[in-house]
Length: 146
Image (tube, rainbow, N blue to C red; front, side, top):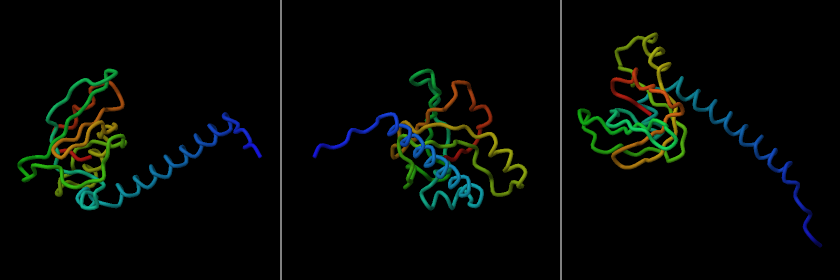
């Protein structure tokens, strides 16, 4: 008995709807984690990298801005430490809130983060290509976290 042919448009439509549902589920899970946990606890779980500095900014493929982030040597870090961030992950790069900041200040910091895709993840650096081509790194002047 010959296998029945698969209708390609139906298959593609089904796959796209499943990918969209997966994206929505991951987005809601990430939003929940970010709103309920501090950056340090997310870093302990491997879901974030903290104490980063912007070491280089360049133009990458297609005119996208690529940020090269490395550990802040003032915090004793030579390597990024263990994390689960991989190439292709969609991440947010933002200023790391200080412990003594008020809640309103922390909320304003969260609004100034930039979105991007990890293009290289090494032991000592993390490179992120930003979604937009504009210069969005003006408000990121201090210690960062991903």
